[in-house]
Length: 83
Figure 1 (cartoon, rainbow, N blue to C red):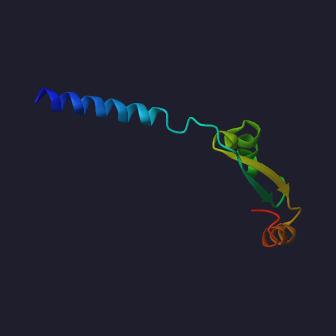
Figure 2: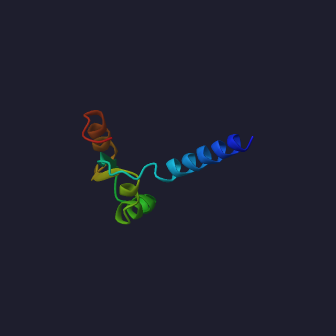
Figure 3: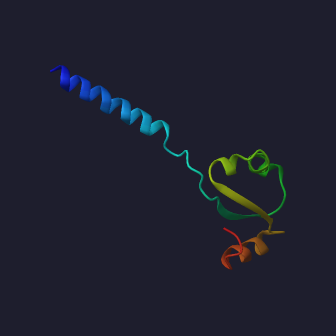
């Protein structure tokens, strides 16, 4: 019975260690173009996230494009110039 407990302890320890080191590797950033209709205070959280590097921490490289109006922003989206 002691052997089973010892095996269970070792397996538990290995599982905990594997979870601790998951995601530690360097990965390439995913490039994303984001089109905004116009500069606005409503986009403040997005500006802060870009400036403070929160998107990079999550593996995203965000390029912010000002669409200069709803019609031009929609055109950029439909022509795959923005996502």
